[in-house]
Length: 264
Image 1: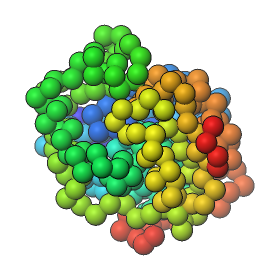
Image 2 (image 1 turned 180 degrees about the horizontal axis):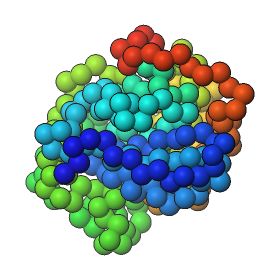
Image 3 (image 1 turned 120 degrees about the vertical axis):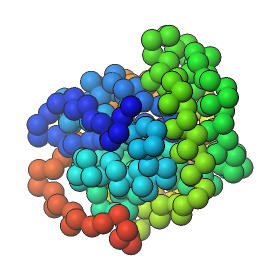
Image 4 (image 1 turned 90 degrees about the horizontal axis):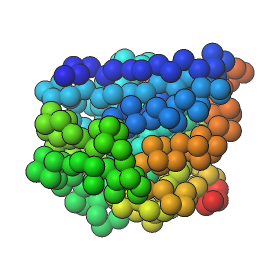
């Protein structure tokens, strides 16, 4: 059982930006491994594993506070799905200078009508006991048996933790819009995403700083960082290079309670 946020530092370019890789509701940070390896030339990727069980913060904001206590401020965050809510709280609190959203959202309304049912992902995780079929559907390609746990919750503890977090999503205020903030953002969306539909992309972008680039990956599902690491690395590399710490002002530390392109 993970009692705290756990990090896997992939080393990388010492002069590049430190970037957190945040998984979604029931996924593992280890699913970012292939993407992280491809980013080590330009950045210092850090894969994040969330706490489990009774030690798991329920809401996205509480989870963001847990992450911040362990990682401190970072240059960038790459967030998948529900991880986008966590990343938005970090950005709104001044804990990061940039966020890349991969099949992600910061408000359930971005997901459209199905956003009202997102809490049902918890019971589905427990009662449905997701396996290879569910993982392959999320990735929109066959997932090897040994990789299933990177994409969907497979242990009972992971499933129960997913249940707690799913039920908590509607019990706390969503993150503030990032549009008025000085935060660099990037959006990557799979056109075969069955959980966060491609239509979410424009709604998410409307809450982000004007001019935020938006990219639609053909043939990619809900976890493009897992299924299409090469394409994601290609899109993320110039964005991360622009966030390199050298020559850039350091943001003033603030608590999380502070107020705060084109489709390819």
